[in-house]
Image 1 (cartoon, rainbow, N blue to C red):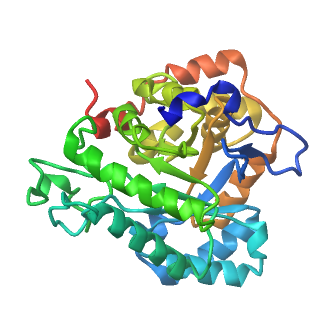
Image 2 (image 1 turned 90 degrees about the vertical axis):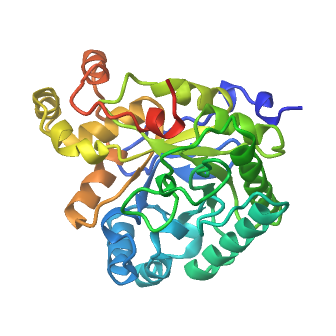
Image 3 (image 1 turned 180 degrees about the horizontal axis):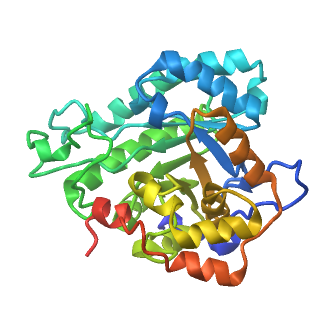
Length: 346
């Protein structure tokens, strides 16, 4: 039986909208409660564990209840140090991490068990780096990049990346990448069943990738983290958000302020007018829009004032009007579509 078909929209969590002092949360499809907004340790702190620690401390002291990190960011020791500096109890913190797609060392990973074993090792390395025996959420960071079943082609890498976390090419309907993802998912399921992670999910997975792992999954992904913001085509690029929701998989948006197009988005006249109407920043409008569509968030900043502003938005009760939601849905100032480019959608 396809495990994904057992879930319906009723299994999807809904966020709380209570008093200003209440941190909103989502209940994942296995019952685990996750903060509606996590602070991302990538971005400005990526590959710099020294600068990461004070940023993590500031984020937690500003009111963030969860940290989003990854093996790929090369700074998880700094995350652990920042948690220690914050003096928060581990039980009061939601900690999410990710493991890289199989084969980031450019080997040809298409032999039996390689991706499975590599993923188990990567998971254990995350726990060691984070100085913990258990995390709350573990994601597969992205599908693998496979061109002619080899890693020799440099197009498998973004020019500024030392490994292949963000593949330029991935056709999940092909046997090779699908077999690799199945091995990786099986490894995550093992660590989940061992109690070393309270939930498991994926990141940057399009529909064919989700369908691939569904063929062997005994645990439905709890989260699909992907880039989503105002300015992308409509409220459901590639049909991916509605597909994830229909399977009980919570969508978590990263780069909610527009990613590489953030300057154009945040200064668009429509954004400025709506922000002025609510006496908030245009960044606050971006976050509120994503929440009102029913999705979780991961946002990243090292500016403590922006951290406090993000937390205030998550705890506030003001809402965008129906007309404002329509205006923002049709805004075309940041039309990049990473869902389409990453998943090779037509």
